[in-house]
Image (tube, rainbow, N blue to C red; front, side):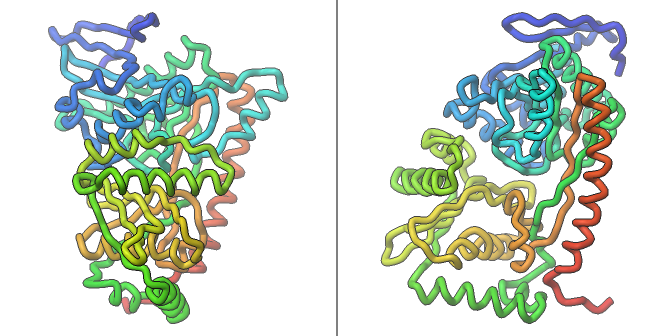
Length: 405
């Protein structure tokens, strides 16, 4: 798709560019509210059923005020239209801090400050508060030139960084679909590790346990028995079934967990209600109840054949309750519903002993200042070597028995 010779301007409505090609008007536009994008048009974009890339999820964040100027996540979405047809979109925000990203660049910000330069604001393409992989350069299903559209979004992000005098642009937790366009533009790749559970065609939880090494299997059985002996029972609800009292409990647990560890709770009660209403069956909670009283919960999203663990909270102090509510209940749900992958969130080496395996994640970064770009490129080259060594070390702790070839 041609891109040369475009002009751009920025005003209160955002940036717009136009080119007449074969009587089709191509417009690249900054969108400040996801609600202004038609939900039907959104569904024609390729997002693999990922619930974090749903119109409902992104709108819930904005409508609840969980993102916005006061939150330091200013919506600055990049969109491409052919005539009035949405053909490409990148969920993007101007950031005034680095909270809620899970790709840590605090040291970069500190280096800028020590050299008398401002790192914030910066531009980020990603999903707020969600270390979940997925497409970031969304294109219309069946479009004749998806790679050209991705290149247009990349070019637009780079132009916005320059026009708005932002220090950098970051594109976090991308999938292979976006790699070529980002790498071709000279962005710097960065790797990390997460832990995902894979469904190997298990018929029930017992078959999963039988696949594990003996010591891991015994430990999981012991943890599950502790929770059962303590009198806990579990109840699953989807967004269509969650009522006010359950939403209040979810919010209470969420706030307690964040405050317990000294973190700022980014989401609010309104977000959980918006998400339940509009995500429906794609939002799930499991309640750990004793004597019919809920004492712990985990919140999940589902879509595209995957289960995503997001938030956990408890009013009871029983260590094994976390593993049961956040992990084992999720594994059982995947087996019961034939889901292929369970992504339980960022970090957590303790997940390996419970059947999760390392999975490499990728993000891309553009620093406008060439001196900082060169310094960070050198750092990332060394970091990739460390991450590769770390991956080999993690592989030595694989919890599964060797399967016959």
